[in-house]
Image 1 (cartoon, rainbow, N blue to C red):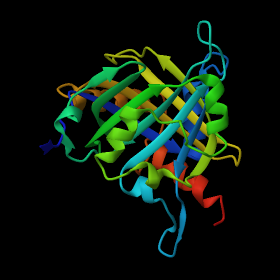
Image 2 (image 1 turned 90 degrees about the vertical axis):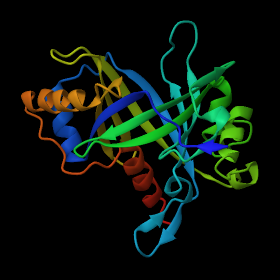
Image 3 (image 1 turned 90 degrees about the horizontal axis):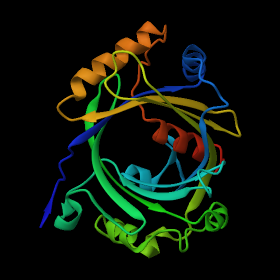
Length: 254
């Protein structure tokens, strides 16, 4: 039996792009020597589109394939992870309707709420730890052996088999820096993440995780906190993931 999963946690996000991202970054005055630095790659099958310039079959059906690896060692080794995300999350079989975990992987369900509208969108993510050495080959294109069995099983619930994952195009790298800060009046730490690309694209996202019950109040507090820092809120609510994948695909000049 399939049902739509119910989230118990939410991530409140406000995203900036281009000059807006640069202005927000300057206003937040983050210390670039303190952020967590990672390289990020995505996979899709970009195609020319007469309507939008480029179409992204996986992203358009709500499937995101993402690889992240740390630049610096954390503890005794560098960290890397591969994530399969379904957003918006469709109805899923009963084993996938609640948070669960296994050896070296974790499956979570939460609401993404991106300002200014903060429309709740349920997302499901299965994040798996990967060996740092192996991801260097994966970044060059092929997804062979990059996905764990539970991730392949999750993709099969939305009609994607291993055959559908062949000949995908690697999009990246995205150079990410992430900071966490405690802000007055915010009930939980604020995450600030900046994404840049080799072609000078720039994105910035400010986010806070909270309960579903507290989401509306956190939305209000986050907007207020940004205004108090003289940051002009964005007019659109496109997520940084969709924005950067689309921009990277357009740069391919298909």
